[in-house]
Image 1 (tube, helix red, strand yellow):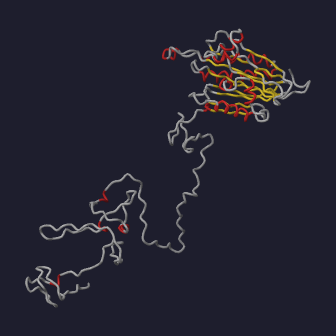
Image 2 (cartoon, one colour):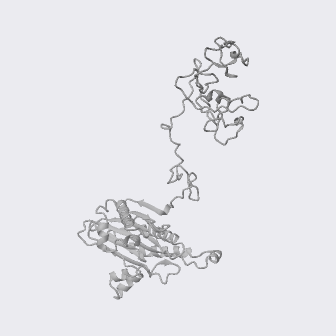
Length: 465
């Protein structure tokens, strides 16, 4: 242990006790007897934070914040000051640091002792980094390095058939239609639907104003008895003022499609097959009205589910259409040298006014009653009158089968001809997508469904009519 050096008075100095002048070499004050050897020597050292409990050498020009020394009490005994190394320190995650981790930590004199007893709900603390990193023993396997998040592999691919959230792209969708991760409500399956076969395609969209898609479609193909193909498209539009219109359109489209797939391979004429298919669709919609008595008691003002239907068959050089309601079918030739033709007549108030000669078409469809339908599929329909027609075009083209969600934005045949892409026969799905986009760009006030059937001219004597 080193000994403290005794300091003597210097020339011109005064006694720190009574401020009397001192002589050079005095060890005691001649006036009050103050022991001059007890006077501490002055120092220009500035305190710095201790590292690992040791006092570092002073750095010239260095400065740091330091707690102000407390005032002395009545006993003239200074209150002991706590160094930063005396105070417990925690890191930002709430974990307690090791004693060596107090380096470069700003002192906090207001922090009480016993801070190590504070409970935290934060995750387990990371271990503090030591000042020195020991080398592994010879022959010891190297410790694995932590993965770089920039190069880390993504989460494993979920099992096939698992629905992922459209918002966060990671959470799974629960049976109620909400993301288990972010809680985002998922779009319903029928909000936007697309399907393509070799010779027919269809697209259906909810639109921009409706809260659900009440349209439905069914497309399919079958073989006639002679082996030639038959292509089918059915489009249905639920009546919004009816109960469960979405169920009505779905039931009607499925029933009509199944009826045609059963009748056409047996050799039934396509026009007769279409007539029978509409009757089957009507039966399916009527069955929806047979609700339990309890359901009617809770909702006494419900009416019967209802929908419209339009369908087309291309088989053996024939183009057959069938419809009930105001959904439509158009013929658009490929070369546009021939006229575009509307193949159906609406079951609507406007069509009746025009047929009776009471209004021209422009006046009738400008009336607010124009879209009031006079024919539909449903248990409360006045009298079901399926409409069917057969055509034999002399040139190639496409059949556009659609709901009023499209033709409201291309009502005149000239407008429809301009909206249909010129390569529709080669790309029917793309054409249906373009037409749905045309309706959405126009305002999307209604559900919109479009089916495209390319028609190819059959050489004379081929196929069956």
